[in-house]
Amino acid sequence: MKSIFYWMMLIPFLVLSQDQQSNNEEYLIVGTAIYSAKSDKTKEFSEGMKNHNEQFHAEGAMGVRIFTIMNGQNAYDYMAVMGPMPWSALDAPNTEQDAHDEDWANNVVPYLASEEDVTFWRFHNNFSNFPTDFEMSKLRVTVWDIARGKYDAMISRKL
Image 1: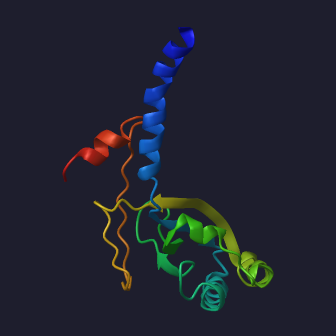
Image 2 (image 1 turned 180 degrees about the vertical axis):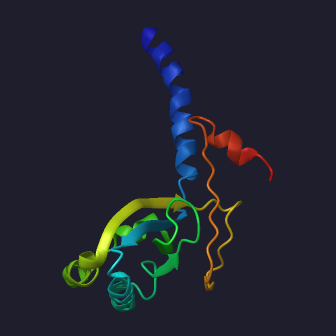
């Protein structure tokens, strides 16, 4: 009798876990990083970053665009924006990883004062609008700080 009772208690969990899997579709993300150049090496940093991105991040999921931050606590620093891409793009093997890392270490890092705030941002289909063939010249980011446990309530709101 006890085993039947335990099975009856378990069935709702099994049903819920099956429902979660159907909502497990892959979504797009954007990776951002903020870089500061050494004050006397701004030109070298810009040139090194430009050459690095042309060689290793010119297109595709790992394509990077560089923006100058115009205001706020990181004003005049640089923001690198990679993507949009699915999480799985980060798992794809990179045959040029050693050359990438060597170029970064030799042509960017010597002019780098700091690297801060490496972040991945999730796109939500109902709130994000990125066509597949877009060209980005300016970037406006809106950040929502969602209280723990309130994500579903926030998503269900109609904006």
